[in-house]
Image (cartoon, protein in one colour):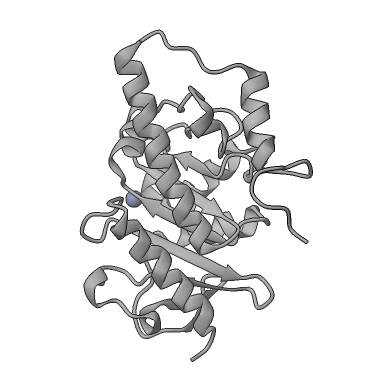
Length: 232
Ligand SMILES: [Zn+2]
């Protein structure tokens, strides 16, 4: 089967979102891309997770043409495509309506960096998009959702904030692979939950200092990262 490993990874990323309690029913989708071939694999639309197979994943090129697959791709395909086209470091995308991150998205508020759990993965707040206009909603809605994300990241490295809160909707997360995108969706949900609880304990809680935010993010990311075991 064409791109078997990618299909398997994308299937597993989708199942991981369910295992971690981020997706109810079919309210989510994950995809991954083979950059060399310019082909992405995405979850099919509306297929129950219990019976989903790697062969059900739909292969699509970056123009949205189906390369292989008998099923209809996820309805959020156009959003995924734009993220792959515009964010060259992205190799996987995960979309969920996970409870706490969606609460922040519905509020239209970015998640402040209240602690090091957040800072280990997101350098600065988890940003939120502005609401879509009526014309954007009535037009090519899913593509316009991708465009509003891309506009929000003008001047921000998408790999320094591997998730976004789409106002009035829910989060999209991404990573170097489909597995990492799902992982970041899980981390985002935990960070969103911690932020809600931080505000419940102290409504005037302040973000951590820039020095603390920098220390934690750059311990794990970039040229001077020291976290984990040395690679030989
Ligand atoms: Zn959605």
